[in-house]
Length: 78
Image 1 (cartoon, rainbow, N blue to C red):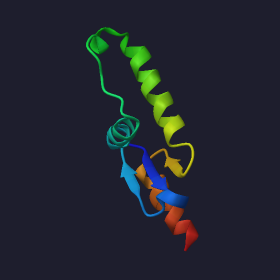
Image 2 (cartoon, rainbow, N blue to C red; image 1 turned 90 degrees about the vertical axis):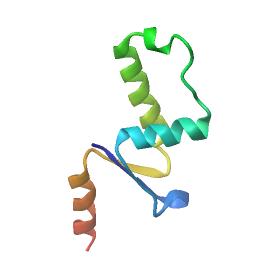
Image 3 (cartoon, rainbow, N blue to C red; image 1 turned 30 degrees about the vertical axis):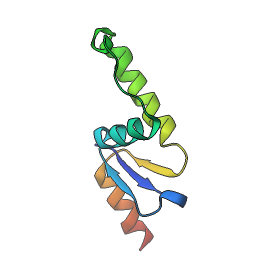
Image 4 (spheres, one colour; image 1 turned 120 degrees about the vertical axis):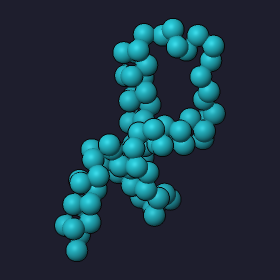
């Protein structure tokens, strides 16, 4: 499960998992699934979803591959 840590204007915000990050992103962008979305190739949806998350959180966020990496970053900082 990836962890998203806000920096700059998002400092102090932490999002655990792609599903919560996706929900916030889609809410802020205003994207809603449309009729027929479920008929699109699942592999395309998976790649689209990952690309959107990587794009949206590429600015004022650090994306950790897992919770252990997130916690390790704090241990190293001390």
